[in-house]
Amino acid sequence: FLVDKHRNFYFLEMNTRLQVEHPITEYITGFDLVEEMIRSAAGLPLTTTDQSAVKINGWAIESRVYAEDPEKYLPSIGTLSKYQEPRSWRAENDVRCDSGISEGSEISMFYDPMICKLSTHGATRADAIATMNHALDRYLIKGVTHNIPLLRDVISNNDFGSGRITTAFLAEHYPGGFKGHRLTSETAGQLATASAAMQFIRQARESSDHVAARVAEYVLLLPQLQDDGSVHKLEARVSLALDSAAVNLQGTNSFTATTVYDNGEYPPTTSKLDISWDVDMPFVELCQPGQENALTLQYLDPLPLGFRVQFMGTKFDIDVLLPRQRELLRFMKEKERLDTSKLVLSPMPGTIVSVAIAPGDVVAEGAEVAVVEAMKMQNVLRAPRAGTIKAVHVQPGATVGGDDILIELEDE
Image (tube, rainbow, N blue to C red; front, side):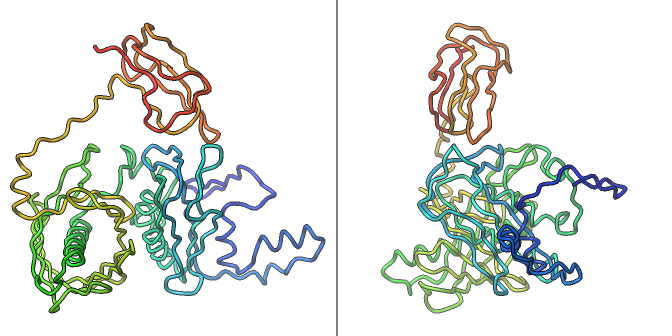
């Protein structure tokens, strides 16, 4: 149903089947709807037919976790190389995962890309939201693109938390489309200090002498989303001091961190932080004074100059440099980007349904050139600009991967 601003209700449909949101009803009432359906189908009486016996207990929220690009809303396929579902947090069964997959499962182009119905419960709406944030941070998925970045950003939005939500929520909060979590002075500080501490611990684990160094200075380059959708590298210089005589290679380490930024907007900060990171585990917990709940980051992959982490749901490629490395990096040439203005790329893995052009054809900007199908959806591909078709690399029935080059245009 829909509700307008005058609180008029409009019922759109009635389905005599189990709905995707059934865990919410089960959480707050304690009734197992699947069991009730089976009892009914078997000719047995329902657990109760007394409406007064159905009591409401607390709040519940459900997030549909999909193998889907949260920026383009297109499905993703692949094999789940790493997969770990979140567990209960503050109370028994306050996190629920309804899924039918495990590590090693394949997400194919032939079926719906939903991975899991992730639900959380709490005494209040705020409790259910806090548990959902924690659960999304502790949900490890590698091998496919997923929509946790968008789910995490929406769930932690103040308007969502206060219930100021409508069907225009996404358009209002992401007018240029969702691009990932946009760092604030608070979250930039959390990411910078946690990343510096992680680098400190990484180096200690790789060293034969984890007692020698108790202080370090790093220059971190953090991807900072701008208003126009572009990404700027926010530079944060972090000075770390270990609060103990030696690094704890397994478990928790305490640091004092001083952070200075290059953007002139964020003030310098000095703070205490505890980092808990077990060997061979992706989850890193950051706890700071005055912080009600620890924040969880995921260490995903090493990179040539740093590493990739998942923070606030979004993946960040972070450069972690020594001060001298930062000085020399200024003289390095940036890698040239591929010019895609004359290419038509497949937006996702799928099957070519039709090709509307041939080499030598002249097309206008936006003209249909091909149709690709995946997961019950057909996507019309259009010419990125006016021009002459140079080459067509596919034909109807062909299977293509995401970002495969399908069609080329002549140079202008």
